[in-house]
Image 1 (cartoon, helix red, strand yellow):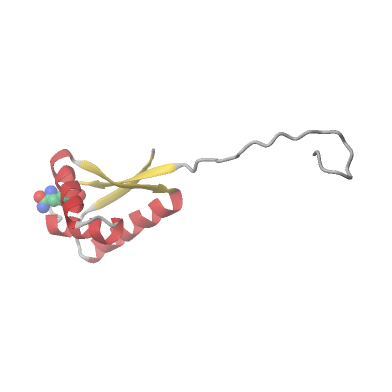
Image 2 (cartoon, helix red, strand yellow):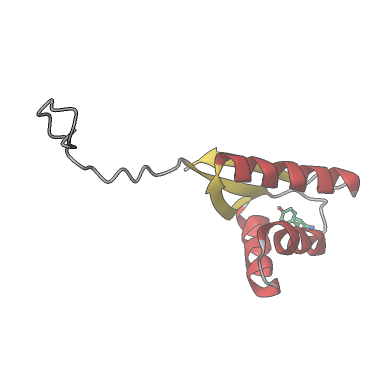
Amino acid sequence: GTGTGTGTGVIAKVRPKTKRPNLYRVLLLNDDYTPMEFVVHVLERFFGKDREAATRIMMHVHQHGVGECGVYTYEVAETKVTQVMDFARKHQHPLQCVMERK
Ligand code: TYC
């Protein structure tokens, strides 16, 4: 480096290293059986949505087959998927939640 003492004469450039994390979308999939109210509750409880946003996302999934709940780093996305799948199973609903690389 350029510090005193080592005397190598090497000048190291400073490069701000702001590495972006890989991001993942967490998606809900539509099905014919999970109650709309349950999906709204999932979006409020696990994705921090207010009732209006949760209802909009639920209706989007209902009408289009798939929709985005949020975008997270790998670990957080994985945790959300597991939480939703465990909660759906506990209530015996076939709701599916998946993640995909953005
Ligand atoms: N299609 C479901 C119904 O009519 C509602 C639903 C919405 C289910 C979103 C899953 O991810 C979902 N009861």
